Image (cartoon, rainbow, N blue to C red; front, side, top):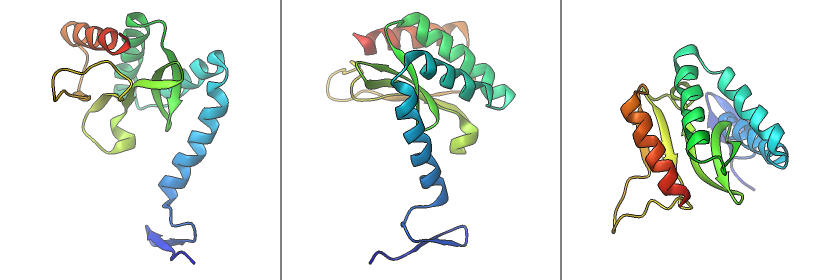
Amino acid sequence: MAEASTSAGKNTKSGFTAEERAAMRERAKELKASANREEAIKAVLAAIAEMPDEERAVAERLHAVVTEAAPELDPRLWYGQPAYAKGGAIVCFFQNPSKFKTRYTTLGFNDSANLDDGTMWPTSFAITSLTAESEKAITALVKKAVG
């Protein structure tokens, strides 16, 4: 029998923390929504709308930059965060700072992204604000990632 784990003073029989169980519930909802592109887009926009003001401004612009750079990507939620998939595989995603307790938004790329550059390359980027220069760099990264 598995031992119970303790999270914030509460025991769980499953061994998962409350945050992990919440993420799994979010993921189950996402899988249902991602079957329908229109519903998936609505879910992404709703998740962005729920973000704190400063994070929402970055997320809205980042969403626009990604979808303009690669309209063939399918927006969807991935663990409660906006992500963009090609052929069902997540290519890129972002994580808002308040959810992950960081001081910056993260734009990340999964292994399905075509970013290979020799034997080592970056797969995530910290974003504190979006400028014309950073939007141009993101556009180039997304286009390269999609191939």
